[in-house]
Amino acid sequence: MNQFLPNALLIMDREYRVRVNSRAFVIGTVLLAVLLAAGMLAPAVIGAIARDDPDRVAIYSGAQLDQDPIQAIQGVFLGGAAGNVSVFGAPEAQIVGVDDLRQAEAQVARGELHGLLTIDRRSDGTLAFRYVSADDATDPTRLLIQQGASALTIADRLSAAGLDPGQQAGVFRPPSFEAIELGGDGSGSNIYEAGGVGVVVVAIGLIVLAFVAIVTYGSWIAQSVAEEKSSRVMELLVTAATPFQLLAGKVLGTSLAALTQFAVVIAAATAGYVASGPLVQILGGNASPIFSLPSLSVVDVGLFALFFITAFLLYAVLFAGVGSLVSRQEDLQQALTPVMWLAVAGYGVSWVATSSLDSEWVRIISQVPFFSPFIMPIRILVGNAAAWEVGLSLVLLLGGTFVALWLAARLYRAGVLSYGQRPGIRQLWHAAREHT
Image (cartoon, rainbow, N blue to C red; front, side):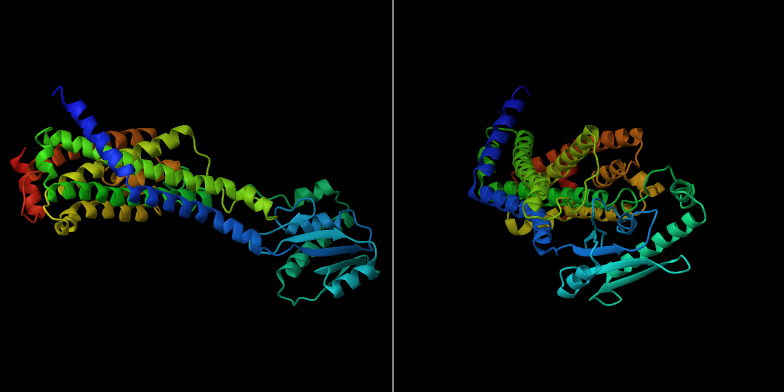
């Protein structure tokens, strides 16, 4: 027993060094990091290069107005400030005032201005607008200008009725409106109503990354065990260490190598996302990212990491145990089918759960070890999980990992020196029972 830790650490160190020093590992890590970083930069850079110049619209006012017409038009282009305004799905526009009507009309004719809005007052005191542009009636900028003219007209009529700007603001103040969801707890019931595009992106990322890491790197571990067994290296290793020490060292070493590659790739993707804003600004575009990530506390990030690492170890020991039962690489995929189906089931159920996170069945299944790593982080992200639910889920996941380790150790012990068999579900069950 006193040799367990030294032997396991030696095997772990060997597995880690062999894996990370291989040419395939280095090249694969670099390629994945470059591709993900480029993938985060590409949309912002392409958007900056391909963006059109803002539509310059001039306003000439021949009428005395209580409200600045430029500000009124800007109010229609949501988010407007300092004359440069934009609306999602609409072209950017730059609203400017002009004093020379003839010169402005000539600029529109030459294409130097997108349009010209003139404001006059009729004999009856009402406002009259005239918009000159080369575009047709479906031009989105023209439609927004028309909406701004309507808002300006309403404000002018209210002023004529004796309402000052403060009273006018009170007229258009939105009512107090509270929506109560029966049976809800105030948190988002799905990722799409929980906080915008950033929440959706992070939620999908957590699900996909967990599944890809489990399946990809779990297969690494199984293949590593099967390769050693097919080359009869295992017979030499078991003379220096017990099967359980081999299992622990191999799982920890390969898992550390996998997490090393995973960390490098995620760091590259994060760097690409962070660098996209300054790079777009250098290119002369809008420095705002395509989406804003939700604010996460250190506790949230720590919980995500804990769920991910524990789930990875849960599946890794099962992959290693099953991989030890095959004698040929050709039999590996068949043997891994039960474990693969567990991962696929957790992945598939998590997608269904994202649209009904407050359902009772989701609360229950988020406590099941093989499903909780996919679902509970999403519930934490949208604020849908109580503290006791998170704690219970972690305890059950850790317990499930130890049970999986116990089962995998028996499979490993049964399969480490067995050759020439094609394992199926029945063979896996008998192997576990015979070595209990």
